[in-house]
Amino acid sequence: MQKQVAFYSSISAAARAVAVAAIGVAFAATAAAQSAAPELAARDWKVPRLADGKPDLQGIWTNKTITPFERPAELADKEFFTREEAEAYVARTLERTNRDNRTDDVNDVLSAYNAFWWDSGTSLLPSMRTSIVVDPPTGRIPPLTPERSAALAAQRAAIEERCKRPGCAVANSGALAPADEPEALDLMTRCISFGTVIPMLPSAYNNNYQIVQTEGMVAINTEMVHQVRRIPTDGKPHLPSHVRQWFGDPRGRWEGDTLVVETTNFKGEFFGRMAAADENLRVVERFTRVGPDVLLYQFTVDDPTAWTAPWSGEIPLTRIDDLLYEYACHEGNRGMENILRAARQEIRAAGER
Amino acid sequence: MTANSRTRYVRTVVGTFLALAIATGCDRTGDPAAQQPATSQQPAAAQSATVGRPNLSGIWQALNTANWELEAHAAEPGPAPELGALVAVPPGPSFVVGGEIPYLPAALEKRQMNRANRWTADPEIKCYMPGVPRANYMPYPFQIVQGTDAIMFTYEFADAVRIVHMNDPGEAPANSWMGWNVGRWDGDTLVVEVTAQHDDTWLDRSGNFHSNDMRVVERYTLRSPDVLLYEATIEDPNVFSRPWTIRMPLYRRLDDNAQLMEFKCIPFAEHVLYEHVGAEENGE
Image (cartoon, rainbow over all chains, first blue to last red):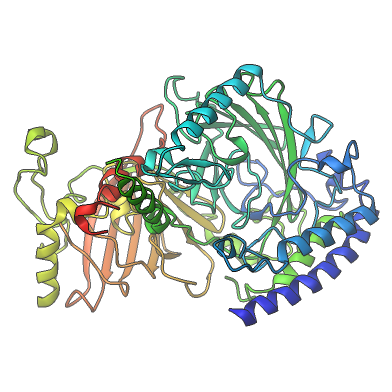
């Protein structure tokens, strides 16, 4: 393991150097690489099509990047990195994610992740944007509505009250939460929803997707965790509005050479970046082939009872020469057993059962 | 995995980054009639994988009792007397060519033990991915999406999914629940070879099982536009004395509003999976 860590550290250093060098090339091409889809198309390149004439979105794609989701506060109104800022940002990020975090306490395990595990890559988006979020122009998502904010605060207060008693543990959110029943744990711990599947946002690793397409259907398999989105493009209506699913119900249509996907019918339980969303969420995504190895992905999150305004982002997916692994999360969920066991024993030891 | 190594970490980073940065691209075809995605890394020969072949795309479902038991059996009480006929085991014919599964003697004993414990030991109870061939005859729909050089089989149950690679993907990187699936055409029949499956899955609810050396060869042939004839030959020298074959039709779901819905069964399995964890009486 040590040897492999050293190998990946050296690769990181080499990759960092290469990434920095490549930034020079990317910077020169910034004008061509900005978000307007048609401008990214090569002079000689034409989008390949299936027999039905629709653009071919198939392949294995990744959205890994070290571009942050939201613009860091210290960058204020800066929409794009300068070359120097980009180099510094990449160097700082790689140093932070790879530094030796070893301690002698329980945090030693929590802090053990470095580039051996992370698969965020070593490069920024070639657009040189300072965030994945592009609207609002601040690069940061809008505030919550007062009602949603109050509701979440009330939930947190109830949890804090509950966690004055035994049986709580630090959750993936970083806050204490009840840990003695599966239903009390978060969707990631239960292996129901890992990462942010809708919209397609990069995560720690397994940032890979396979698209298989036939007439009337585009299917996207999200590697983490084998979540398939089946997107009909044949004009079928959505499920009835009372039928709710964790990953909603997607419907696609072609607007020229862009696949537009609208997803509704969400249950209203989310994890991670979308945790504040509720059952009124509607996500619109746009997929456009812009080059032989690039699939431009743009999304808009619209949830009027959660955020005060819709917000949008974009990230080009790049083709990878690899195959997806099967991420069988639930089948191997020993973490759940250990978490429940610890919480239940703590409750019993405190004489509360 | 193509012939090129999968471990080209630096090259992949550089390659994709430069491909983004250099907007002119290095494509090889601008032919709009090409079925093949124009990438710098895929061989042109892949075009033949599905062009000119029967299109198996659609929503399919078995309409039989294979998931209850692959061999012929009479009706039996189910696991919950208070639910009466709702969860009784229905009778069913054999789906095994020749009638019986040819177990080795020691393996047959294990099958009998599985069967005796089926209301607790069946991995379906735990919402585990069912493996192949069982996923195809569970009583829920699945969808075939026949792409250009990959065919996706996506199942409603437990979000199970497998990708059938139509171009040689090399060796399986590891065992998995839904196996390593390699496909080819034999005339108008899709042939899929499935290897590298975990041995934790069962072949039905009655305890029929396999080891992780099992090899399954499936054959899919359209009998008519809406009926697929499905055969699977199972070979596992650790468990069976010879290869054996199951055979059944799969029917296209013709409903106007047919679609796979979300059957995330994890919440339904959590109680039985975790109720005894941390219980004092178990000495945990």
